[in-house]
Length: 126
Image (cartoon, rainbow, N blue to C red):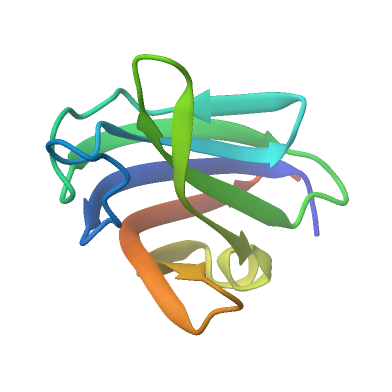
């Protein structure tokens, strides 16, 4: 894998598991390749089918081959985890692009906590 730039678009969420007693989720997504540098979407209030349509850019360094997407419900005090997923970037590096709905697995992948629609484009720098 060579160094390059990864552009990530978080388009929307679908059927996110509700974490609130009243109303629906105030959802946002944290995106990261390593724990030192995280980016996040804005919070979309009171929906389990949020539309973010936000673009992020990551500089890819040697050895970075996985991207993480953590979906949270923002609360007055803290946050609840809606779901987490990760994508191996090998085929993104090979093909140059990615456009898929990614499931947020729960309980060893036996059920789903919803899914997020993600697009990615990779441009090598060498």
